[in-house]
Amino acid sequence: MGALEQGHYMDELEENDVELDSDSEPEPELESDKEVKEAVRVLLEGIGEDCEREGLKRTPHRVAKAFREGTRGYNQKARDIVKGALFPEAGLVHINGHTGAACGMVLVNDLDLFSYCESCLLPFAIRCHVSYLPSSNRVVGLSKLSRVSDVFAKRLQNPQKLAKEVCAALDASIKPAGVAVVLQCSHVPFPETFVSSSDWNQVCSSARLGALEEDQAQWNDFLALLKLKGVNGIECSNTLQNWCPSLKNTVNGKNMGNNKSYSSMVSAVVSIIRAIGEDPSRKELVSTPYRYVQWLMRFKTSKTPEFKSILNLNANAEELKKEAIMTNGHGSKICYELSLPFCSQCEHHLIPFYGSVHIGWFGNAERCIDRAHLLALVQFYACKLQVQERMTRQIAESIHAWCDKGVAVVVEANHICMISRGIEKVRSSSATISVLGKFATDPVARASFLQSIPKCTG
Image 1 (tube, rainbow, N blue to C red):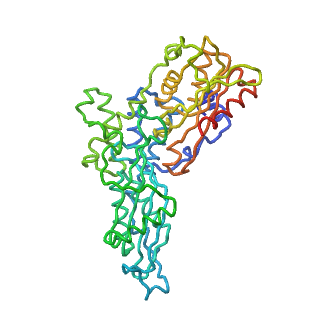
Image 2: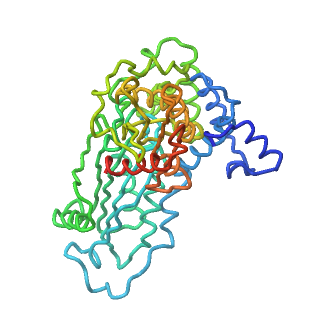
Image 3: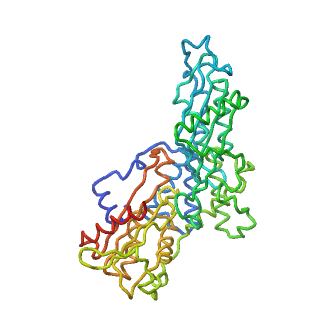
C-alpha cells in the first residue's frame, strides 16, 4: 500500500465500506494493551513521526498485539501442555536402553521459533532441536516438545537462559531418563553494520539433564542424529558476549544526556516491559529501555536530501565495472548495481525487515553512478520507518529525477513481522519492483535487467 496514493485509496475504501485488514476486527482490549499503545505513541513522537499519518494510525494497536502474541508464554505453563499427552507404550516393560531409558532416544529437530531479545526487545530467530530418553514406559506426544519450547520462547529471553528453561520444563513435566535442548539463534545486526543476511549474529546454546548430561555416549548419539538430519556445526557456547549488538556498548541513562524526549521514551519502554508481565528492575532488563530507544533513534525522521548531494556527478564512464554494463536489443547501455544490502524498520509493527536492492538504469559517460553512492541512497531511505513498496518507489523516483532515461529497482526482503508474530510464515520473503522511463515501455530492456539479478547474485 505504501506505493499508492494513500489518501485517495483510503477514501475509496471507506466509501465502499471495505475492511482494511484483520487488525481492524473488533476484539476485547486488555488494560496492558492500552499501556503499550500509549507508550508506542510516545516513542513515535520521540523519533519525529506523526501518529496520525496514514500507515501509523493503527501502529500502536499492531505493536500492542504483536507484543501480546510474542510474550504470551508468561501466561502459559509447560505442565498444562504436557498433561494428558503422556502415553504408555506397550512392549517396553522388559526392554531398556543401556542407560535405563525405555526404547532409546527420541529427537525432534528443526523447530522454528522466535523470541524477543531481553537486551534490546528485538525479535530473534531460533532453530530448536529437542531430544529425550523416555522412562517409566511412557512417551510424550511429539507436538508437545514444540509447544513447550514455544512457551518459553514467547518471553523476553537470551539463548542460554531459554535453553535451560526449556530443558528444565521438559524434565519436570515428562520425567524422562534424560533430556537435551540445542538452540541455534540468530540476531539481526544493526543497520550500520548490516552487509547481508549472513552477517546476523549467530550463537549456539545447549542444556542437558539426566543421562544425556551424565553419559557422554548418549550425548554423542544425539549429536550424530542431528548430523544425520543435516544439522552441522553444533558448537555450543555458554557465553553470550556480543550476542546482541546492543551489548557491545554499555548503555545507561548517563550517556543518553538530559534530553526530555529520550527520558519520556525510556519511561515508555519501561511501561511496555511492565505491561507484558516482566519486571523492569530485573538485572538483565535494567538497561533494555535505553538500548531499545537507541535502536529506534536510528530511524528518526529526517529531510530528504538533494539527490545530487548523494551521487558522484564527476565519475567517469571507465569507473563503471565492465560486468555491470550490458546491452539490450536496441544497443543502449544498461548499467546496474546488484545486491545493495539494507536493514529497515516496518512502520506497521516497529519490527525490522532486511534484504537487498537491485538497481538498473540507462547510463552514459556524463552521468555515471558508483556503488558507494547508490548504497548511501538506499540506506537513506531504509533508515526510517518504512514499508517495502514505498521504499522501492522512492529509490526509483530519486534516481529517475536525475537520470530520466529510465530506471528499474527491485527490492527483495525478509520481514521479521511476517515470521515472529502470529502468522509465523518462516522463510517467507517478498519482492517489489518499480520501473520508470524506458524500462516501463521496453520489455526487452526490462527482461534483460531482471535476468541479470539471479546470474549475479547466485
